[in-house]
Length: 617
Image (tube, rainbow, N blue to C red; front, side, top):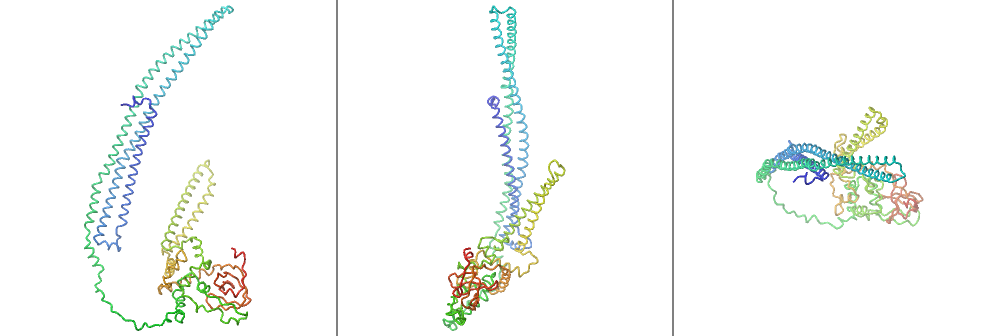
């Protein structure tokens, strides 16, 4: 079985096959190299994992590792560290025993293959040259024979013609003899070249090509053997570390067997035992006599019932419902729209309505119901249009500082933004360095380009870097504020910020739900009231400069109305005011006298003229 005799006409296919063999060898090298990288990465991750869970010195964790289960865990971490070292050994041995040797062998194999196929191509070119010479001599011999035949025919024709002179006949005879001689010479030359070609062809197919192909076959067989040896080495490298890895696993098993649950339980007793005796039974106390009460004591219509909602709203829950809404705005939103408006007076005289609108205390519902109606009332949601935070949440926009998120999520978002900006800064700095190097090259070699053409681009990149740095500083400041790293930040401001972040959910309904118990009451502790009040004051200042609601028309007061309740406004007969919110079906219209005076009046007390364009918009 020899490639020289069996594959004498497959030169091109052998060339492709040997190239595929080299590619396969390189693929094996790449596979082992990636395996070593995986082993190194795995060992590094194991070491980092073991280091991560090691107890920190002088910390509470170190005290907890007195239990046998924790000691076994520490032993497991140490064994995993040794286990990672064995994977590093695997990587090193594979790199030195397989990758280096195979890489060197591939270079030698490429050189040998190149030399063998070079000899083969040289032999092919030689036989092709001999074939061309043979074809050339054959065509020349054929041409000379044809010329000799034509010369002979011409001579015979001239000799048979009686009108031709004897001199012309002699000339034709000599020409025919010359052509015959040339044909004989061409014949001899063709015969010689043919014999030579046949000899070269025999040598090519029976000596040169078999020898070359035999060398290629031996080269390919050595490559195959080398791959097998590498596979054995690959397995042996793993096999060498198995005993040590087994010892590491045995150490983990031994550590697990050393755990003593009874000993750990005793340690817990010693650590937390107080020495007190358990409390005895509680005696029954009879409260039957003092609990005699009338139904009116719990009614909301008597004097005590009237006071409780007001006190509850004005005291404990007043600053907690919406700390970023002013007191008068909140009162107007909660009370005014739900009070029944007074009927218009019989005459335009002020004396016709001496008491103004009906007192809200007589028909006032519980505050929790009032607040629930406000939160679920769709027409009144536009009362928050003047609040930036409420508007951004309503439109789905996110504040730049992520202040609408809880503290931890906000910190993550800010940290992510800072990381992104740092990456962009690094990218811009790399681009600036590249432009600077290019400019230096242009300065040294002016024929390659104009250095001044890069100044504009360099300035642009520097400007981008400066903008990104300012942006990064801004987000880092917010991040530092969230993490409490700012030195100028007072304890009170930090407490307020944490309180606001914890009480600032993404939607309005969630805000009400977080602060309202299922029965409609507010259950926050009294100790937080002062903090909420301070926070409400800060938010009042923040929204003092907000733009007022736009006017949608004007109105003229038909009667005098004295706004004595929270959320209402007094008007005088004949006075013209601005309408900022039309009647939503509850009998009240919201009007404004100036930027600071606005409130609700009964719709029947005014004549409204709405602006068509404002109403459509």
